[in-house]
Picture 1 (cartoon, rainbow, N blue to C red):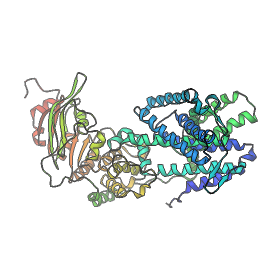
Picture 2: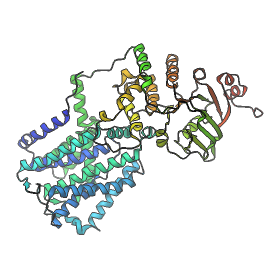
Picture 3: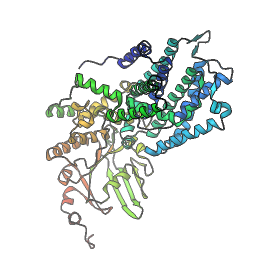
Picture 4: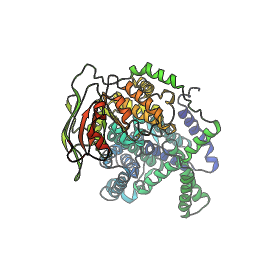
Length: 608
């Protein structure tokens, strides 16, 4: 396959922007409409980073759009400030501060609650603009007299007076905003953004501080909106009060939905479609107030029939026209040989030459209301040991695992890992120090590729819980490629690295589930039913895989397939009704009467 052309998207965008002023005006579209497309496209790019790439639906972008625009307009109309671009930048900074403060509140909740908080905050900003701050914002009159576009260079000032010059000014900032956004989504930071959109709980469990990532993206989206607000004031020569209205936020959301969320180009296409149609319905067809009804119907039809928006439709047409190359499977022997050759290269937090307990729990208890999921458990695993945990359904195995990995806090008791007390540690920090698990039900990033899944996992180990590398290329993360390749080889997925996770067979997904945990470089790996749902042949292969993984690591495994589990582990802990029933070697457990009775329906009251 030929190598992609560097900066292809940027080059195409630049050519389109150069062509627009020569194509659209002859078709009857006014310069003002074209410039508004540039401005709302820029605001939409920021919103797409928030919604399309991070999965955070905000209806509060009007608050930052109005804040940035009003502050810039105030400087340019009510003070002696004359540098237009600097005023817009200062307005953007004020919008960023507002975004930070709003984000601290709104991001305490997720889903619909987050969206509703942003609606409420937008209404608060609208009220503030019309009432307490009307002396500075002009209230219902807005701020007139904003100077036209210009660029102050210190020794001279460049004026943008003609329609073409003004278009060049706004198109330039759209292009800059798009280039920055493309760098962000191609960065390690951008990949974690997509992980948060796909599966925030798993991103957290892999060692990422997702709250910090969400807050930064929220601020970035606020900055895009604030900058766009300043451009609107300059374009119109007037900062209107309706910039703060909920309708403005609604239009930004609808434009992104029409164009296609998660594409960056979608919001530009959506803004062009929305504004060109509204202009056409009002000025060409003279529909009066009916244009809103017609435009609403068009919006519904586009969203229903183009579920991925206009940008998604173009991508689908491209794939239909040129086809896509499918990933082929490598021979099994080659895959296994690759795994054997590279398994030793995989980074991990070594526990070699250590003795004693790597993890130790004392008196571990978890109550949910009046129900005891686990009661007074004393449990310890030695460095380098492979421990199995079994028990009938409802024995409390999953809750016990969640406490060990700090996903849930115990009601009482203590947990020590590698000599430190982690009882009240969160799951993100526990993963960072080498304690993680794979899940009984696959927790993968389904819309991403196998390579991207493993990258997300490895990035937390290589970069820590949070890093502000928005403009850094993934290729420049030292050790990332080697970690991903080694992990893929170890779980026999080298030949599937570029395949979307949704296209994997079930057994491959189970191996990837283990691979995500492995890529964090754990010294203690907890595996929750790694053999669940597998065929007999897949189980044999997975047991061999787990044995290779166990080299220089400590494993704790839960599974219901006792024959496979007993072949793998050195000691077994049996849970019954939230307590430890017995511990011993696989042979001792096989012949234990208490275990046999537990699996036949419960232990008799007189059993010890």
